[in-house]
Image (tube, rainbow, N blue to C red):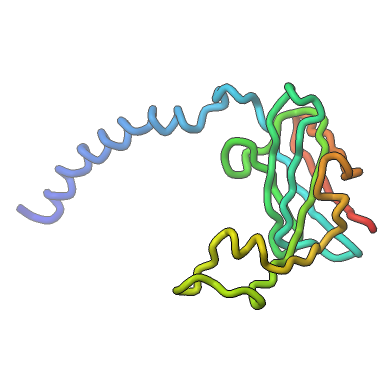
Length: 161
């Protein structure tokens, strides 16, 4: 049997497999996952005029029963794009309290486990340096708020001392 003939016999089988998997894929990508419609939320975090890399951003709903938190970590340029249930799926519409936490951990002063691995207890005891003021790390003290509207949203967070 020639190679061309082998390929032509396999093509219908592959087509049937791909078409059979489409409904399964559609279930995972559906809008109706019980959480609600999410809207894109992206922006940057700056402090002292500079982008804040590796910061954790959390949007916590103002109404405790009115939604789910959305989070992301900033990249090297201070850019983030929120996730609620799946990566970068956005946030539910509504009002949020916003927290930003950025900490540098100095592992040079700690002794790691054999093989260079660090256990969580070692990391917890390691010296830490806050990269942004502490007030931004708690919903009780952060002055940051945001409203996610049913559209694409840009939220730039400018942190001050």
